[in-house]
Structure formats: structure tokens, C-alpha cells
Amino acid sequence: MTKLAQWLFGLALLGSAWAALALAPPGLQPPAPLRQALLPLPVYLLVAFGCYSLATVGYRLATFNDCEEAAAELQEHIQVARADLRRRGLRL
Amino acid sequence: MAPRGPERLSVLLPTYNERDNLPLVVWLLARTLGDSGIDFEIIIIDDGSPDGTQEVAQQLEKIYGSDKIVSWELFLFASGTAYIHGMKYATGNFIVIMDADLSHHVRLHFMYSLKQKEGNFDIVSGTRYKGNGGVYGWDLKRKLISRGANFLTQVLLRPGASDLTGSFRLYRKEVLQKLMEKCVSKGYVFQMEMIVRARQLGFSIGEVPISFVDRVYGESKLGGNEIVSFLKGLLTLFATT
Image 1 (tube, one colour):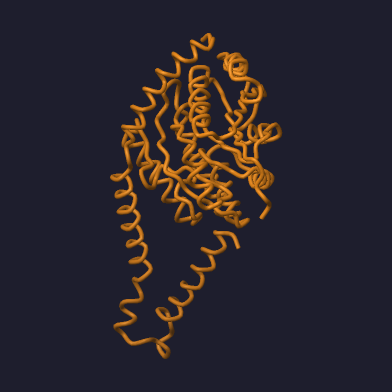
Image 2 (tube, chains in turn red, orange):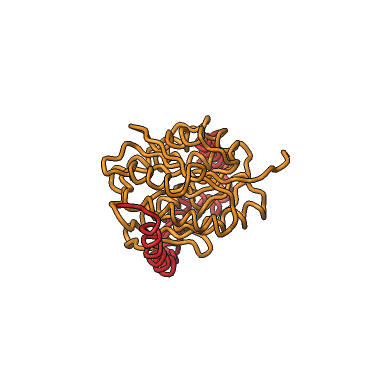
């Protein structure tokens, strides 16, 4: 199953469960408090996911390593490399 | 599992206008691998660079010898096809794919000896996002785009690897051949597709933190077009794998 298919399947499953409970005809409705919580649930979940995404990306952005040492080390290596290559006959 | 014979590493270096960086990359590789006692060869595949990269590659071949350096000149390819050509001539049983612009800080022996021996992985992928991996010379905007894109990729594809667009990887030769047959995309997306397909085929993937040091010489290739094609590619992978 492709990822898209998985998502559609999952959404269909959750969506139909939600619809069955939240949009049921008067005779089959679950108790009022439950219904009150259920109706806005999809929107809540969407907003919650949005907040999670922002927080996660923000955190990862803030903790993105800056490799100062690697860069400095690279510069050193470059100097040594150029000298050695010249010695070995490389003409640039 | 097939018995392991003597091991040799083939490093594939696709180049385009890397006249300044190429000798440095080759020198660093030769020293790192030589010091670690790893048998290796470097295959340079140049895409008809107008700046004389091919000529520099040939000089390097003379300096290091043809069993260590092999250079080829091709024309008009996309990132994927360089590897296909390179692999035909690779005599090693492990293949490393990396950039020739010094952005991949060459601590190759880590990838090879630590992870490959440790876990006997089919693929070892360099990651900028875990451990002490990271970047140098990136402004906030670029870091944000990188992290945002990676987050999107993780949510949509759940790939089981932290850095999908990275292109510093070690593959077993048979594994790379199998993956090349299956992959159809180009550029960043090609790198992503490799990992996703590898997962599908049940190959094991190990990760090693790497430093991505921004271009020492030359221009970096990231722009609006790249972002659009990345998104298109991501959605294609989402819908087809």
C-alpha cells in the first residue's frame, strides 16, 4: 500500500467513525457531553498537529549543530593538501 | 550471507565545474583512506565541465596511479546517471557516493569501519540531523527550509532514516545496483527515493553523523526551483511508494 493509500485509508476509517458518532440521527446519538466534544474534534486535532509541527521544527532549528571545528579542520587540511599536491606535480 | 572477500571501497565523484575542489577532495580521500588501511579507488565522472575539471582529473590520475584514480567524461546527465556509469567501472564491493565540492567533510573511515563492521549494514547514510552531525555556513533561512522539508518528509514518508536528502552514503555494491534499477527520479528526490526503496526491499540502514560544510569554492545549487522540484518529488514518492 502506498503512503498516500495508507493516509486515505486511515482518514476514511477515523472519518467514518467520527461521522457515525457525531452526525448520527437523533435516535442513535451518544450522550450530549460526548457529542459536544466530538463535533469540533477534527479541527482540534488539526490545530494540535499544527502546533506540534511548529514546535518540532522550531526545536530542531534551534538545535541544528554548527560545525565550527569541522570547518576549521577543513581549512587546515586544505592548506596541507595544496602544498602536498604542488609538491607532487599538480599544476592548477 | 555471502562470505566476505577482501574489501575494496569505490568512491564515486560526479563533478561539474569542480576544478578547484576536486584535487582537494581527492587528496583528503586518499589520505583518510590510506591512513586507515582501507583499499580504495576513486572514480571521477565529469559532466563535460567547461572549467577544465577533466584536465585536473587526468593530472590526478597520473599522480596517484590508475588503479587508484579513474576519470571519465560524459555529457548531459542528471545526478542519477553518473552513478550508473560510475558503477560499471567500479571494482570495489562497497560504493561511496558523495559530493565533490568539499561539503562532505571527509571522515569516511568512520562510516566504513565503525558502522559497516559494527552492524553489517547494507547502507550507511550520513546524517546532518543527529548526534554531532551538523552544518557550517548556513544562515537561518536555509536551516529553516532544511528542517521544515525534512519534517515534511518524515511525516509523509516515515522513512526510518533521519536525513533523506543527504548524499553522503556508503552502499554495498549489489544493493546499490538493485536500487539503481528501481529508482526513477533525479536530484534531491533521487537520494530520497534510494532510501525509501531500500526500506521497501528490506535493506538495513545505519546512520553516522556528518558535517556538511558549505561550499569552499564555487556556487551552491539551492534556489526556488530546487524547492519546487523537491516538493513535486516528495509528493510523487508519497503517492507511488
